[in-house]
Image (tube, rainbow, N blue to C red):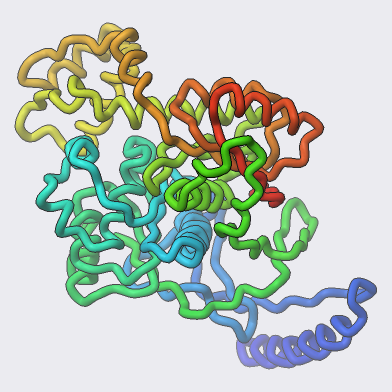
Length: 431
């Protein structure tokens, strides 16, 4: 029976290839589409433990887009890896800089390119200025990506555009992370990463020059959807249409941040907006039905990112032995400040001395200095309300597709807040 199954599968694959060749000559009139899959390996389960069986397959006569070097990837791990790898690959192509992403549940918690850290960023990210100077570009990119929203990056799937070196592996070693996808690894990096998570850390090596095909397919509830793959690479060419009055303020650094934010939201569940500064995402708002709600969600993350650099936050005195992620979470809760009585008691127990509260007025005063932030939207802003709200979070630059009947109103709002805005003409919905 096994031999018969293999024989008929092989002959069916030949028939399918012949049928595809003939039907492709008919263009949109083709009567049938045939696709043959080769099971590669089983998965423990699908999205949830009760969704069994589950597995991963390749299109017959085609490789998977990665090789498994270590660990056993799961269903969501692979969805994260596929999206994160495309993001960093495109960022590298568009900017020429080493790029990294930190993914959770098929959306980026952070993404970044290799831009040097300031001293205050070093303090906020728990790296000494001396150590920061020794970081390789790929290590620097991941350090930034992970610190966009380190609470959400807990248990992430990482992706980097360049070969993982020892410096990058040592950063990953300190973090709680499920796995990584990259174009390659040094021997030193492999040795470090294989020991992570008791040997279960997932290491994927991306297939060089992989061709996913022009058309992609998806099965949902008995229906098969097909579409041209979104292979549009956002680049500096898309940032040339500055629709606000002051066009000279859109410098090369601003264009870089516009590209980072736009490619990031291309791989974020829609509706989405993203805020970027100094080559890194500082707030991602994913999967909201209302665009202004995306802005509010991401804007709250921007505030948290900024206020992590407040002297009171940097000065928190943790007890010896407090774990890294506990310190991250404690700082965020200190900034948010909305403790229950029971929660506050446990929170205070982490410190050598109980911190003075960080007041609303102190936070508001600190945020007044925020500026130079870029916001990108995956579709046009339908009303000026998103611009009004973005103005509260240090936004100086806006990039969006344009095309709304309210474009004039939105442009006027940008002018009122002295923001510069570009229209890309490219919508980036992702579902």
